[in-house]
Image 1 (cartoon, rainbow, N blue to C red):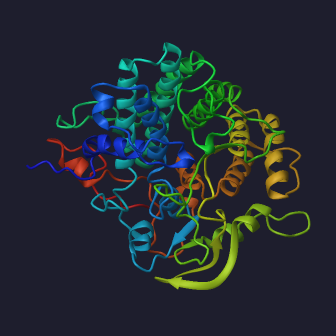
Image 2: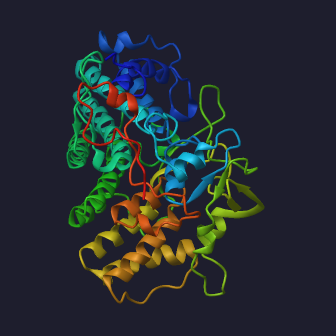
Image 3: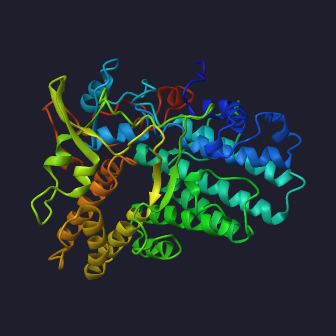
Length: 467
């Protein structure tokens, strides 16, 4: 069988060095990359310089952003599956025929086979940065530790974005290999999460030894988190998210204690992907003011709790707005999404509001319901305008309230509604607009990831039928 090159993790390895050169030379002010005359990949792999490594490290932020904010990217596709949003793109009916009716097809790189190649390209880029860091002269040992902590944290984020879409299909881990070699084996979901934890904890050690500043610039989305010490708080925030996903609630509380969680700080405090209209940069494609394609799922407004005066939850009012009804393939939308207000609005990676809710979730998971009440009330009152809760009658009631607040607080930011439904076995509770619609449990592998192997993975190589 001829091994294909498109859309597999090995193809991502093949194209990653090219991406690294392009990203390092982007000339993008918002990402702080200012060396358009970067000499290229050979400088990093054969004779790395301080400026080349610095620009490549900054380029990892561009790589981490890629595939997240497009209208067929991570946030949009998971938003459709989590019944946060619709995409009625007049040029492509597959946003309905595949993403709502199915099956999810790994042969469709823009849909069922999506959200796979871009993270692996960036993981490969980070491996190149790490190897160059080991060899580069003119960089102190302390600065090298800072670079390593940064790169491994970004790798962990990329692996996390892969595994939350593939779930128990698993995913490759050992991708730091020659692009012409055999593809990396598919690791189990548990093994991937273990690797993510290992990366984040190793990064913590590096960052603690990383000195007072990074030897490169971070984007404005990392304002307040742009030194090794403050970036570590972002690292621990991601570690808390992963711990909660794993049901390690005690570990989550420990990580949150080192994060930037602060109930007295703005809920929007956090780390973001940023955009600009500058040459070489990209704009936020989730901003769709004329509702050409993106619409809110009707369950958002219909399912909102009421404020004391009778108005819906403030988050629903702020994140959706009425539009002229539009019907596509027998689905009618009456609201558009207003989560993003311009083409340069940032997209959250993780925010204080999520961290507060993660602490509440961890306490619920540990059976400490009274400890969860204050955190949920912080979010209910400040973000939703809702009346505070006095107490929870049961763990089930507490979990229902927690997931309600996560849905409205994190709407259209990172596929959280679908991920949460997966984590708690609640896919069947997601709204089903028409009898032929399906709720999908996971994405399949891209077809070329399967064809590239002498023995295809045991699962993930067939279209995902949904339930």
